[in-house]
Length: 279
Image (cartoon, rainbow, N blue to C red; front, side, top):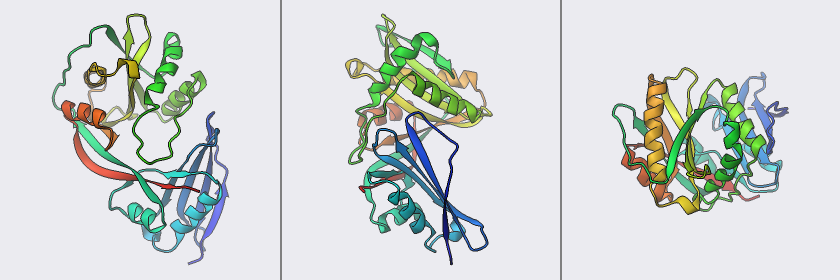
């Protein structure tokens, strides 16, 4: 089968990265697959999402798309998570990509209340959408809590956060019609010590997806992550009564967060792998 690879113009722009897009088509111009490569502005590790229609696999489409994406950058490329023992897993291994991080996906069924002991010296706040202006500066500083999250052998460079990036991410979620729900712990001085993020579907039903959870190093070991998550669970159950579950993905090596989630009732659903090409 003749496969054509067309580079497209991606209208999506981010302050911290650019994204390249390729479309694979057949002789009759029918779409066969796509590749999206996000390249950070600072030249760090690029992220690749490659998809081939199931009916068009094993015909060289994925190989052509992968070659186009890898040719566009000389640096390391990290794939999106591929489910363990899936066609994507087998494809990455066969093309010589290196497995660098393993993740376990979990789900919490929202069928029972969850509780945790408050942590003395802190107070929790919740909000949906845009960060309150008085919290922007301290929230940007708190994002560094995720700089040392376990990434095993992946060439991971922490994201650089500022007020513009914070606003961009918030707006991206809003543009999809979804709800970005934040719970954060503040010290008595009003500084943010930790935060956890959850994205609720546009219809407020089904399963919501956890994004980042971080506790600054000087505030760890006090139970903030469990307290925040437990309180957020109760808050979103009240605000979005049609929700049925919460989804999370955690690196297998992130034992601290795995223990927190397990204690709250999250149960494994499947596993995935990140692959890397070193350029």
